[in-house]
Length: 196
Length: 71
Image (tube, rainbow over all chains, first blue to last red; front, side, top):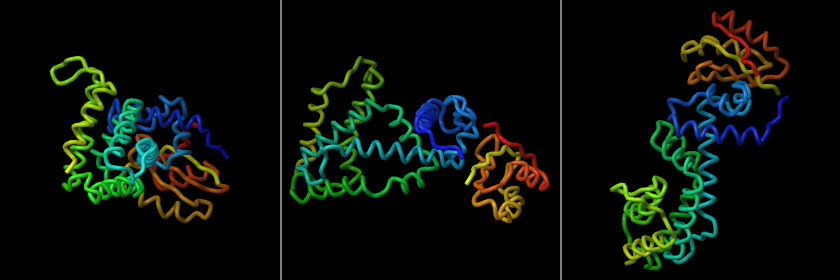
């Protein structure tokens, strides 16, 4: 019996993400992936049941890595402003380091596989976020708003800045680099907006 | 346990249903699936003590093309 080769698996994962980001789900096939990762199609089927199984496993692993990176040094019991700061730093760091992984997760969220993706996510990350928010509200450090409004104010500004940074330019085509100073400035405004 | 990987021309769910009884009827096959999303329509079989030629014959008797996918 053939055994699992971790280096091979890593190469397969990396190439799969690259391919999906560049060509979309429609342009992604087991043959093309096998060629790009320098393995035979038969090898792919040793590791994965089928195309969908490969995509969903990839999603599960990528999401897990993202969640772990986001929750690093974070505790849902932290004071709100401190907890938000840790999350901003963690999220920014992950996005800048893994732009393709972010893009892949975004694509999957907008694909027909979204429902299955939510099942795989598990409750850990979601619960940590929920507890953090409800603690903040209980301690009157955070305004009570609809969760979507909270997310849009708490995180969308960060992802907007990260996007500018990754494109190297902002709205009008002006050059843009995300610095710690810029990020802190934005974070302070976000905290101000969310403070009761 | 061994994994057998074969290329087929089974393209539709309805066709999967026609080969299903043949594959389900084999004790040496513990699990199988066909990746209809894939261009090679890969038949993946988890089995013990089953020869690829046996599977090829089985699928061909059902009226489909089947060959081992080069590993």
